[in-house]
Length: 324
Image (cartoon, rainbow, N blue to C red; front, side, top):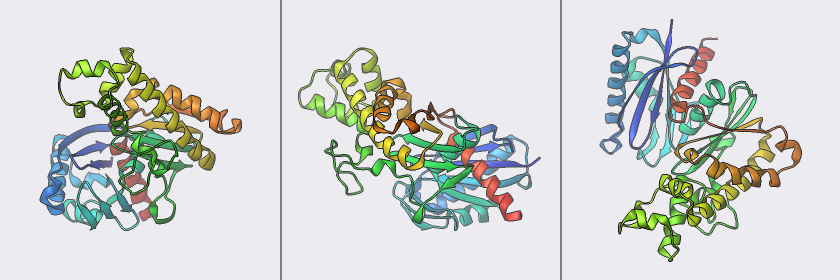
C-alpha cells in the first residue's frame, strides 16, 4: 500500500501529515517554521519532519507515492515555484524541487487555501458535490473553486481572491493598496479591529471589563464571540455587520460560479451562526432565487486538517497523472 504526505507551510508553523490513499489522516506533527533563517533551513527541517513522521509509522520513503505542499501567497503549481509569500519572505523559490531533492519523493505544491478547499471537496464537508466554493476566514479572507473535482485557477493562478472585492461600505485601506477590500472587515482580524475601534471611540462593551485595564489591542475575534454570547450590544452589532458584508461579497461569487455548496473554514469560521446567520440572510437577498434554492452552506469538516489532506490528495492525483 502506498501513502501520501501532506504539508501546510505557514509563517509560524509547518504541519506535516501522513495520509492513506482514501484521504484518512493517520498521523501529523507540527514544528515552528523559522522562516527568518532562510528557505534552505526550512527545507532541511521539512526533510527531518518527513523522516520523523515515517519512522513513527514504521514506513520507508519508498512507500510514499508523493508529497503535497500548501504554501501561502502566489504559487506556480505547474512549475512548483513559490512566486511570492510575504510571511515566509520567499520570492521565486523552487519549493517542489528543493523538497524533492532532500526527501527523494515526488513533490507538488499549491496555494494553501486551494489545498484547504480541495481537501473539503474530496474528503470533507463538500464531498459528493460537483461545484464547490470554499472560503477561509482567518487573518484575511480567501476562496477557491473546485469544479467537478478539478481546481479552477484562472489566469496567472489568481482566481479566488474574494477578500479583495471592494465594497463602498468599508472605509479601510487594504494592504494590497485598494480601499474597501472585504477582508479588512470579514476576517478574524477585521472583526477584532472593528470592535477595538468602537471601544477606542467611546462605545461601551463588556469587553472593556474583561480587559481589566489592559490594552484594547488584546481583543481577538474569539473574545468578540464570547461577548456576543454574553449579550454585548457592540459584539452583536459588529458580527451582524460583518456577516452582512460577507453575504454581499459571496453574492458576487455565487452569481459567477453557481456553486452547489459553500464550505466555510478557517479560525474565523468558529464564530458559527453568530456570523453565518446574517451572512445567509444577506446572501439570500442578493442573489437570484435560482442560485439560492439549490445552494448548501456548510462549515468545514476538517477545521485544522483540510489543508494537509487536500495537499496530499492533490499530490496523489498529480503523481498518478504523470504516470499515465
